[in-house]
Length: 433
Image 1 (cartoon, rainbow, N blue to C red):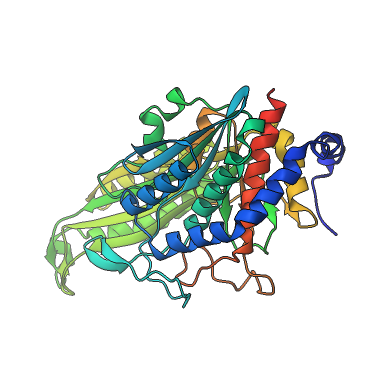
Image 2: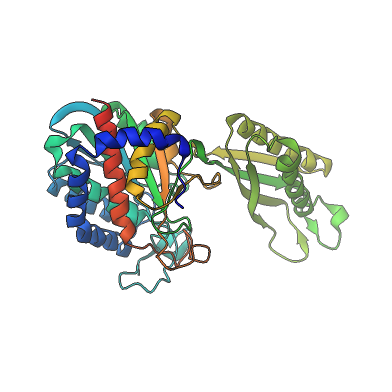
């Protein structure tokens, strides 16, 4: 039996009586069906021509051209390679924003698709393959599909729709700014102030067509942690002649694991401290001067986030001092928590229930991945949801996940995603009249 949020059943019934009477629902679905092949072609072009964060030059040019052909007001070069377009409806009203991310990953594709990426570029001093391994190709195609759909009925739309094609969601290159945060710094919401913003993400090993979202916190805040442990170099055969930063680093790593297990109240919200990279030493019999640790911190509560930062510094510095070494801690604050606005959640759930049909809508566990959609949702009410895209008949538990070189989507999800965002935009604007 389909699972839904029972508290929305009455609300859904009341809204459906209005929505079903309005021609927008049927008209939108008819136009989307007409545009379905075009949406698939867009996705395949993006998939075959991926570009890394802040390098989405060809992608931006392609998007801008397609949007211009729809007769929309297009702006380019936002946050380096971002593109936005404004659809002015035929009736007065508010503004709603829809967002898709543009960048690919340094992953060499292994899907065997006829339109698989063969792109190579330089990343981190190495030659790497480039692939849309996270589904951003689908996101862009869906948003273009929404733009084309709503453009065909602009005279009926009350207000404006702001289409945001955002670069660098996977993170700007080292030493660069980018993504949603930079778009906002450059005044995106000052020039175009939406009342709400919607976004989606395909994949996440969910069965085709299922929808998952949570009220309130949904995805974690993310911070990057760097610890430099400085000792004193000596011969490996005479460890007493120096200060060993490798042993000290090992003790620090163990100490950091007590933060989540012993220091923070995990009954309030989960948290993670992970060290993912250790660099130090050049030879088997030399104890080096320095070791560098590189890791990530994930959290869902702002106060816990602050506490974890303080504990990392306290533990690293004091363990190092006890060994006669020093530790320098740097924490680069990344994306905030992705939060679904509670009122917007209540308001738009009936639309998602309608779009889902007989497919399942469920509340997922908190996701310790991060999303820079969070910056947009910090400024205005936001609603972000997952859309299952595992091919029908394939086991979601064993299907290649996002960021895998084998990741792919069932292309039928493109039409469903286009329906979801189109109806969310129209239903929201109608309620704002």
